[in-house]
Length: 329
Ligand SMILES: *[C@@H]1O[C@H](CO)[C@@H](O)[C@H](O)[C@H]1NC(C)=O
Ligand SMILES: *[C@@H]1O[C@H](CO)[C@@H](O)[C@H](O)[C@H]1NC(C)=O
Ligand SMILES: *[C@@H]1O[C@H](CO)[C@@H](O)[C@H](O)[C@H]1NC(C)=O
Ligand SMILES: CC(=O)N[C@H]1CO[C@H](CO)[C@@H](O)[C@@H]1O
Image (tube, rainbow, N blue to C red):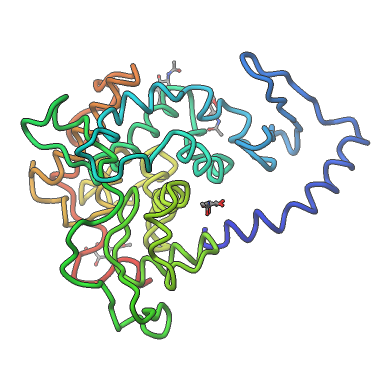
Protein backbone atom coordinates (compact mmCIF):
# COMPACT_ATOMS: atom_id res chain seq x y z
CA UNK A 1 0.00 0.00 0.00
CA UNK A 2 2.91 2.32 0.71
CA UNK A 3 3.81 2.45 -2.97
CA UNK A 4 0.34 3.39 -4.20
CA UNK A 5 1.30 6.81 -5.44
CA UNK A 6 4.43 5.54 -7.10
CA UNK A 7 2.40 2.94 -8.95
CA UNK A 8 -0.11 5.52 -10.08
CA UNK A 9 2.61 7.60 -11.62
CA UNK A 10 4.33 4.66 -13.16
CA UNK A 11 1.22 3.32 -14.87
CA UNK A 12 0.43 6.44 -16.86
CA UNK A 13 2.65 5.56 -19.80
CA UNK A 14 1.75 1.83 -19.89
CA UNK A 15 -1.94 2.74 -19.77
CA UNK A 16 -1.55 4.91 -22.84
CA UNK A 17 0.12 2.00 -24.61
CA UNK A 18 -2.43 -0.46 -23.34
CA UNK A 19 -5.27 1.73 -24.49
CA UNK A 20 -3.89 1.75 -27.99
CA UNK A 21 -3.56 -2.03 -28.03
CA UNK A 22 -7.01 -2.72 -26.70
CA UNK A 23 -8.57 -0.14 -28.99
CA UNK A 24 -6.98 -1.91 -31.96
CA UNK A 25 -8.34 -5.19 -30.66
CA UNK A 26 -11.73 -3.46 -30.47
CA UNK A 27 -12.40 -4.89 -27.04
CA UNK A 28 -12.95 -1.63 -25.21
CA UNK A 29 -16.52 -0.55 -25.01
CA UNK A 30 -17.50 2.98 -24.16
CA UNK A 31 -20.62 3.01 -22.07
CA UNK A 32 -22.53 6.21 -21.53
CA UNK A 33 -23.43 6.52 -17.87
CA UNK A 34 -26.93 7.47 -16.93
CA UNK A 35 -27.07 10.93 -15.28
CA UNK A 36 -23.59 11.96 -16.26
CA UNK A 37 -21.33 12.95 -19.11
CA UNK A 38 -18.62 10.66 -17.84
CA UNK A 39 -17.73 7.94 -20.32
CA UNK A 40 -16.89 4.60 -18.82
CA UNK A 41 -14.30 2.54 -20.62
CA UNK A 42 -14.85 -1.17 -20.14
CA UNK A 43 -12.77 -4.21 -20.95
CA UNK A 44 -13.00 -7.87 -20.13
CA UNK A 45 -10.00 -9.95 -19.18
CA UNK A 46 -9.83 -13.47 -17.76
CA UNK A 47 -13.56 -13.41 -17.17
CA UNK A 48 -13.49 -10.19 -15.18
CA UNK A 49 -14.76 -6.74 -16.03
CA UNK A 50 -12.43 -3.76 -15.60
CA UNK A 51 -13.35 -0.11 -16.01
CA UNK A 52 -11.87 3.36 -16.18
CA UNK A 53 -14.08 6.34 -15.44
CA UNK A 54 -11.68 9.18 -15.98
CA UNK A 55 -10.69 11.53 -13.17
CA UNK A 56 -12.76 10.00 -10.39
CA UNK A 57 -11.87 6.36 -10.95
CA UNK A 58 -8.79 6.15 -13.09
CA UNK A 59 -6.88 3.10 -14.24
CA UNK A 60 -8.37 -0.30 -15.03
CA UNK A 61 -10.06 -1.51 -11.89
CA UNK A 62 -12.96 -3.82 -11.10
CA UNK A 63 -14.14 -1.20 -8.59
CA UNK A 64 -14.45 1.52 -11.23
CA UNK A 65 -17.28 -0.44 -12.90
CA UNK A 66 -19.49 0.32 -9.91
CA UNK A 67 -21.05 3.63 -8.95
CA UNK A 68 -18.48 6.21 -7.92
CA UNK A 69 -18.84 8.41 -4.85
CA UNK A 70 -20.20 11.44 -6.72
CA UNK A 71 -22.99 9.22 -8.07
CA UNK A 72 -24.48 8.76 -4.59
CA UNK A 73 -22.91 11.40 -2.34
CA UNK A 74 -23.51 15.01 -3.36
CA UNK A 75 -22.58 18.44 -2.07
CA UNK A 76 -25.89 18.88 -0.17
CA UNK A 77 -25.29 15.60 1.70
CA UNK A 78 -21.82 16.71 2.77
CA UNK A 79 -23.37 20.00 3.94
CA UNK A 80 -26.02 18.09 5.94
CA UNK A 81 -23.45 15.92 7.67
CA UNK A 82 -21.18 18.81 8.63
CA UNK A 83 -23.74 21.58 8.94
CA UNK A 84 -22.02 23.59 11.69
CA UNK A 85 -18.45 23.50 10.49
CA UNK A 86 -18.48 27.06 9.12
CA UNK A 87 -20.40 28.65 11.95
CA UNK A 88 -18.54 31.59 13.52
CA UNK A 89 -17.55 29.67 16.67
CA UNK A 90 -15.99 26.77 14.71
CA UNK A 91 -12.20 26.48 14.57
CA UNK A 92 -11.53 25.74 10.90
CA UNK A 93 -14.02 28.04 9.17
CA UNK A 94 -13.75 27.84 5.38
CA UNK A 95 -11.23 25.00 5.44
CA UNK A 96 -13.16 21.78 4.81
CA UNK A 97 -15.33 21.32 1.74
CA UNK A 98 -16.97 18.70 -0.47
CA UNK A 99 -14.57 19.16 -3.33
CA UNK A 100 -11.49 18.45 -1.28
CA UNK A 101 -13.11 15.26 0.00
CA UNK A 102 -13.98 14.09 -3.51
CA UNK A 103 -10.57 15.04 -4.91
CA UNK A 104 -8.91 13.03 -2.13
CA UNK A 105 -11.28 10.08 -2.50
CA UNK A 106 -10.57 9.86 -6.24
CA UNK A 107 -7.06 8.63 -5.43
CA UNK A 108 -8.50 5.64 -3.58
CA UNK A 109 -11.69 4.79 -5.48
CA UNK A 110 -9.81 2.45 -7.87
CA UNK A 111 -8.73 0.52 -4.75
CA UNK A 112 -12.31 0.15 -3.57
CA UNK A 113 -12.86 3.18 -1.32
CA UNK A 114 -16.59 3.90 -1.60
CA UNK A 115 -16.73 1.64 -4.68
CA UNK A 116 -16.97 -1.82 -3.08
CA UNK A 117 -20.20 -3.83 -3.04
CA UNK A 118 -23.68 -2.54 -3.77
CA UNK A 119 -24.89 1.03 -3.31
CA UNK A 120 -25.96 0.41 0.30
CA UNK A 121 -22.51 -0.93 1.20
CA UNK A 122 -20.86 1.98 -0.64
CA UNK A 123 -22.90 4.57 1.26
CA UNK A 124 -22.27 2.75 4.53
CA UNK A 125 -18.52 2.92 3.99
CA UNK A 126 -18.69 6.67 3.42
CA UNK A 127 -20.82 7.03 6.58
CA UNK A 128 -18.33 4.88 8.50
CA UNK A 129 -15.22 6.72 7.33
CA UNK A 130 -16.84 10.12 7.85
CA UNK A 131 -18.16 8.92 11.22
CA UNK A 132 -14.57 8.53 12.36
CA UNK A 133 -13.71 11.91 10.86
CA UNK A 134 -16.70 13.67 12.40
CA UNK A 135 -16.12 12.36 15.89
CA UNK A 136 -12.40 13.15 15.81
CA UNK A 137 -12.89 16.72 14.56
CA UNK A 138 -16.01 17.65 16.49
CA UNK A 139 -16.34 20.57 18.86
CA UNK A 140 -19.93 19.62 19.69
CA UNK A 141 -20.96 19.21 23.30
CA UNK A 142 -24.21 18.27 25.03
CA UNK A 143 -26.08 21.54 24.61
CA UNK A 144 -24.56 22.74 21.32
CA UNK A 145 -27.10 24.11 18.83
CA UNK A 146 -28.16 21.47 16.34
CA UNK A 147 -27.03 18.78 18.80
CA UNK A 148 -23.54 17.51 19.55
CA UNK A 149 -23.37 15.44 16.35
CA UNK A 150 -23.76 18.41 13.99
CA UNK A 151 -20.28 19.76 14.76
CA UNK A 152 -17.96 17.44 12.83
CA UNK A 153 -15.08 19.09 10.92
CA UNK A 154 -15.00 21.90 13.48
CA UNK A 155 -11.23 21.51 13.92
CA UNK A 156 -8.36 20.83 11.56
CA UNK A 157 -5.67 20.68 14.24
CA UNK A 158 -5.13 20.20 17.95
CA UNK A 159 -5.72 23.49 19.75
CA UNK A 160 -3.36 23.47 22.72
CA UNK A 161 -0.72 20.79 22.20
CA UNK A 162 1.18 20.02 25.41
CA UNK A 163 4.18 18.56 23.60
CA UNK A 164 5.70 18.36 20.10
CA UNK A 165 5.19 14.57 19.68
CA UNK A 166 8.73 13.76 18.61
CA UNK A 167 9.67 10.15 19.43
CA UNK A 168 13.43 9.67 19.21
CA UNK A 169 13.02 5.91 18.94
CA UNK A 170 12.40 6.57 15.22
CA UNK A 171 15.32 8.96 14.67
CA UNK A 172 16.80 6.77 11.92
CA UNK A 173 13.61 6.09 9.98
CA UNK A 174 11.50 9.17 10.68
CA UNK A 175 13.79 11.83 12.16
CA UNK A 176 12.12 14.92 13.56
CA UNK A 177 12.90 18.17 11.77
CA UNK A 178 14.22 20.76 14.22
CA UNK A 179 11.42 23.20 14.98
CA UNK A 180 8.67 21.02 13.47
CA UNK A 181 5.72 20.10 15.68
CA UNK A 182 3.97 16.78 15.18
CA UNK A 183 0.79 17.56 17.10
CA UNK A 184 -2.61 16.34 15.91
CA UNK A 185 -3.68 17.57 12.49
CA UNK A 186 -6.12 16.44 9.84
CA UNK A 187 -9.43 14.65 9.31
CA UNK A 188 -8.41 11.58 11.32
CA UNK A 189 -5.76 13.47 13.24
CA UNK A 190 -2.13 12.42 12.74
CA UNK A 191 0.12 12.57 15.82
CA UNK A 192 3.87 11.87 16.19
CA UNK A 193 6.80 12.04 13.78
CA UNK A 194 6.55 8.35 12.82
CA UNK A 195 2.94 8.73 11.70
CA UNK A 196 3.65 11.90 9.71
CA UNK A 197 6.65 10.06 8.25
CA UNK A 198 4.66 7.00 7.18
CA UNK A 199 1.80 8.88 5.56
CA UNK A 200 4.18 11.36 3.91
CA UNK A 201 6.10 8.46 2.41
CA UNK A 202 2.88 6.95 1.02
CA UNK A 203 1.61 10.24 -0.44
CA UNK A 204 5.09 11.32 -1.61
CA UNK A 205 5.01 14.54 0.38
CA UNK A 206 7.69 15.53 2.86
CA UNK A 207 5.49 15.76 5.92
CA UNK A 208 8.42 15.25 8.29
CA UNK A 209 9.75 18.64 7.18
CA UNK A 210 6.31 20.13 6.67
CA UNK A 211 3.69 18.62 9.00
CA UNK A 212 1.83 21.96 8.75
CA UNK A 213 0.80 21.11 5.17
CA UNK A 214 -1.94 18.94 6.71
CA UNK A 215 -3.64 21.96 8.29
CA UNK A 216 -3.16 24.10 5.19
CA UNK A 217 -4.64 21.82 2.54
CA UNK A 218 -7.96 20.01 3.04
CA UNK A 219 -7.42 17.67 0.08
CA UNK A 220 -4.15 16.51 1.59
CA UNK A 221 -5.77 16.19 5.01
CA UNK A 222 -8.51 13.96 3.55
CA UNK A 223 -5.96 11.97 1.52
CA UNK A 224 -3.98 11.24 4.66
CA UNK A 225 -7.13 10.10 6.48
CA UNK A 226 -8.33 7.89 3.62
CA UNK A 227 -4.84 6.40 3.33
CA UNK A 228 -5.03 5.51 7.04
CA UNK A 229 -8.46 3.92 6.44
CA UNK A 230 -7.18 1.90 3.44
CA UNK A 231 -3.86 0.77 4.94
CA UNK A 232 -3.25 -1.93 7.57
CA UNK A 233 -1.36 -0.88 10.71
CA UNK A 234 0.63 -4.11 10.37
CA UNK A 235 0.99 -6.44 7.42
CA UNK A 236 -0.73 -9.32 9.20
CA UNK A 237 -3.77 -7.19 10.04
CA UNK A 238 -6.66 -5.91 7.93
CA UNK A 239 -7.13 -2.28 6.97
CA UNK A 240 -10.19 -0.53 8.38
CA UNK A 241 -11.58 -0.63 4.83
CA UNK A 242 -11.13 -4.40 4.50
CA UNK A 243 -12.61 -5.01 7.94
CA UNK A 244 -15.60 -2.82 7.13
CA UNK A 245 -16.57 -4.06 3.66
CA UNK A 246 -15.99 -7.72 4.55
CA UNK A 247 -12.87 -8.38 2.47
CA UNK A 248 -11.24 -9.55 5.69
CA UNK A 249 -11.95 -13.03 6.99
CA UNK A 250 -11.35 -13.28 10.76
CA UNK A 251 -8.98 -16.01 11.95
CA UNK A 252 -9.90 -18.38 14.76
CA UNK A 253 -8.01 -16.06 17.11
CA UNK A 254 -9.95 -13.05 15.86
CA UNK A 255 -13.24 -14.82 16.42
CA UNK A 256 -12.21 -15.92 19.90
CA UNK A 257 -11.29 -12.33 20.69
CA UNK A 258 -14.65 -11.04 19.34
CA UNK A 259 -13.22 -9.25 16.30
CA UNK A 260 -15.83 -9.47 13.54
CA UNK A 261 -16.07 -7.75 10.14
CA UNK A 262 -17.88 -4.43 10.62
CA UNK A 263 -17.67 -0.98 12.12
CA UNK A 264 -16.51 -2.14 15.57
CA UNK A 265 -13.30 -3.59 14.18
CA UNK A 266 -12.50 -0.35 12.32
CA UNK A 267 -12.27 1.33 15.75
CA UNK A 268 -10.10 -1.51 17.00
CA UNK A 269 -7.70 -1.00 14.08
CA UNK A 270 -7.54 2.79 14.30
CA UNK A 271 -7.57 3.25 18.08
CA UNK A 272 -7.09 -0.13 19.77
CA UNK A 273 -7.39 -0.06 23.54
CA UNK A 274 -7.89 3.71 23.40
CA UNK A 275 -11.58 2.91 22.83
CA UNK A 276 -12.03 -0.89 22.58
CA UNK A 277 -12.43 -3.73 25.05
CA UNK A 278 -13.72 -1.53 27.85
CA UNK A 279 -17.45 -1.96 27.49
CA UNK A 280 -19.71 0.88 26.37
CA UNK A 281 -17.40 3.78 27.18
CA UNK A 282 -17.99 7.36 26.00
CA UNK A 283 -14.89 7.48 23.78
CA UNK A 284 -16.28 4.55 21.76
CA UNK A 285 -19.93 5.61 21.88
CA UNK A 286 -19.04 9.02 20.48
CA UNK A 287 -17.61 7.49 17.31
CA UNK A 288 -20.53 5.06 16.98
CA UNK A 289 -23.05 7.90 17.39
CA UNK A 290 -21.51 9.89 14.55
CA UNK A 291 -21.65 6.85 12.28
CA UNK A 292 -25.31 6.19 13.13
CA UNK A 293 -26.22 9.87 12.69
CA UNK A 294 -24.63 9.91 9.23
CA UNK A 295 -26.35 6.66 8.22
CA UNK A 296 -29.67 8.31 9.06
CA UNK A 297 -28.84 11.56 7.25
CA UNK A 298 -27.78 9.65 4.13
CA UNK A 299 -31.08 7.79 4.13
CA UNK A 300 -29.46 4.40 4.70
CA UNK A 301 -30.77 4.18 8.26
CA UNK A 302 -28.90 3.20 11.40
CA UNK A 303 -30.58 -0.20 11.57
CA UNK A 304 -28.37 -1.26 8.62
CA UNK A 305 -25.33 -1.07 10.90
CA UNK A 306 -26.18 -4.42 12.47
CA UNK A 307 -26.16 -5.68 16.05
CA UNK A 308 -24.10 -4.33 18.96
CA UNK A 309 -21.26 -6.87 18.55
CA UNK A 310 -20.68 -5.78 14.95
CA UNK A 311 -21.31 -2.07 15.47
CA UNK A 312 -19.07 -1.67 18.53
CA UNK A 313 -15.78 -3.01 19.87
CA UNK A 314 -16.93 -2.96 23.49
CA UNK A 315 -16.00 -6.63 24.00
CA UNK A 316 -13.13 -6.87 21.51
CA UNK A 317 -9.53 -7.60 22.42
CA UNK A 318 -7.39 -4.87 20.81
CA UNK A 319 -5.23 -5.85 17.82
CA UNK A 320 -2.40 -3.66 19.06
CA UNK A 321 -1.87 -2.99 22.76
CA UNK A 322 -0.94 0.67 23.21
CA UNK A 323 2.42 0.02 24.90
CA UNK A 324 3.97 -0.31 21.45
CA UNK A 325 3.27 2.21 18.67
CA UNK A 326 1.22 0.41 16.03
CA UNK A 327 3.07 1.96 13.11
CA UNK A 328 6.44 0.57 14.17
CA UNK A 329 6.02 -2.54 12.01
C1 LIG B 1 -26.35 -4.96 -0.44
O1 LIG B 1 -25.27 -5.58 0.23
C2 LIG B 1 -25.53 -5.83 1.59
C3 LIG B 1 -24.26 -6.30 2.24
O2 LIG B 1 -23.27 -6.69 1.38
C4 LIG B 1 -26.65 -6.83 1.71
O3 LIG B 1 -26.92 -7.11 3.07
C5 LIG B 1 -27.89 -6.26 1.05
O4 LIG B 1 -28.93 -7.21 1.05
C6 LIG B 1 -27.60 -5.83 -0.37
N1 LIG B 1 -28.74 -5.06 -0.86
C7 LIG B 1 -29.29 -5.28 -2.03
C8 LIG B 1 -30.42 -4.41 -2.41
O5 LIG B 1 -28.86 -6.15 -2.79
C1 LIG C 1 -3.18 20.26 -1.88
O1 LIG C 1 -2.85 18.89 -1.89
C2 LIG C 1 -3.19 18.23 -3.09
C3 LIG C 1 -2.97 16.75 -2.90
O2 LIG C 1 -1.68 16.45 -2.47
C4 LIG C 1 -2.41 18.82 -4.24
O3 LIG C 1 -2.76 18.18 -5.44
C5 LIG C 1 -2.70 20.30 -4.33
O4 LIG C 1 -1.90 20.90 -5.32
C6 LIG C 1 -2.45 20.99 -2.99
N1 LIG C 1 -2.91 22.37 -3.06
C7 LIG C 1 -2.13 23.39 -2.77
C8 LIG C 1 -2.74 24.74 -2.86
O5 LIG C 1 -0.95 23.24 -2.44
C1 LIG D 1 -3.52 -16.31 18.94
O1 LIG D 1 -3.57 -15.64 20.18
C2 LIG D 1 -2.61 -16.07 21.12
C3 LIG D 1 -2.87 -15.37 22.44
O2 LIG D 1 -3.25 -14.05 22.27
C4 LIG D 1 -1.20 -15.78 20.56
O3 LIG D 1 -0.22 -16.22 21.46
C5 LIG D 1 -1.04 -16.51 19.23
O4 LIG D 1 0.21 -16.19 18.63
C6 LIG D 1 -2.16 -16.12 18.29
N1 LIG D 1 -2.07 -16.90 17.07
C7 LIG D 1 -2.05 -16.36 15.86
C8 LIG D 1 -1.99 -17.30 14.71
O5 LIG D 1 -2.10 -15.15 15.70
C1 LIG E 1 -15.73 -5.09 -7.02
C2 LIG E 1 -17.07 -4.84 -6.43
O1 LIG E 1 -17.19 -4.59 -5.24
N1 LIG E 1 -18.09 -4.90 -7.28
C3 LIG E 1 -19.44 -4.67 -6.83
C4 LIG E 1 -20.15 -3.76 -7.84
O2 LIG E 1 -21.55 -3.67 -7.53
C5 LIG E 1 -22.23 -4.93 -7.50
C6 LIG E 1 -23.72 -4.74 -7.27
O3 LIG E 1 -24.11 -3.45 -7.11
C7 LIG E 1 -21.64 -5.77 -6.40
O4 LIG E 1 -22.30 -7.00 -6.31
C8 LIG E 1 -20.17 -5.98 -6.67
O5 LIG E 1 -19.60 -6.72 -5.62
